[in-house]
Length: 243
Length: 47
Image (cartoon, rainbow over all chains, first blue to last red; front, side, top):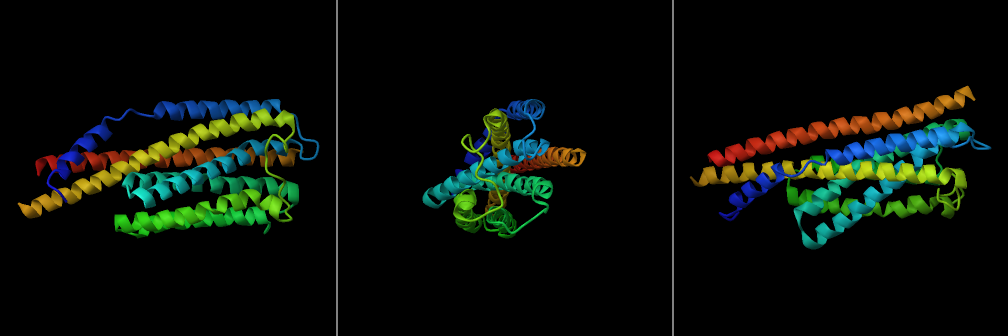
């Protein structure tokens, strides 16, 4: 490590400490989500077949959409890490993976709550459900891998490879309802959803997207502080050994 | 109908418990990371 590095890190840590808070984004996202959910629940009429169960769509579908967006971020950041080797891309990928895993978990549980009264079962080995469960498990594995590997470079390289492979599953999940015979309905978009439900779906999708951005940015900042303090501790130990 | 309404309420509760739970965890992780960075910077300055 060069002699100038500790000073550089000291400056970086001061800059990080002075960074502007993003709590305002969290507050806006929260208010947007409350508003969108209230509007969706209060304004949309019951579905002809599903009745009020349709309202689960406003939490299940935005969770799935935003999990896909998070894993898209993982794929791009992982590629950038493998290409450029900069630590910040690894931290972005890890942050997005954590949040994406949360939303995939929510998607599975909410889908199960929807499935019980609609299909009569909590779970079935349907292609859409199974591919989503595989996606979830791959990213649980990704997070476990990050906690087991101590060497930062090796952890970043292995994570980037797993993150890319895991994100490749997203198009399979999305297309599974077209490629295979499945219980799950077609992808929810304006051409497959009744016009009365489209606005509620979009506003909830955007509100959850704001929350996703807030979570990823905040997790990234925390991860960067964690790495910086590790670097500073390593530098201090090296300086101490030199002295 | 009342039974299906219970599933809707359960779904919204699960969503909010998940989001608030993660938000609280994130807040604690962030606070701990900041504390560790402050400590490491202080140690660095002393060294």
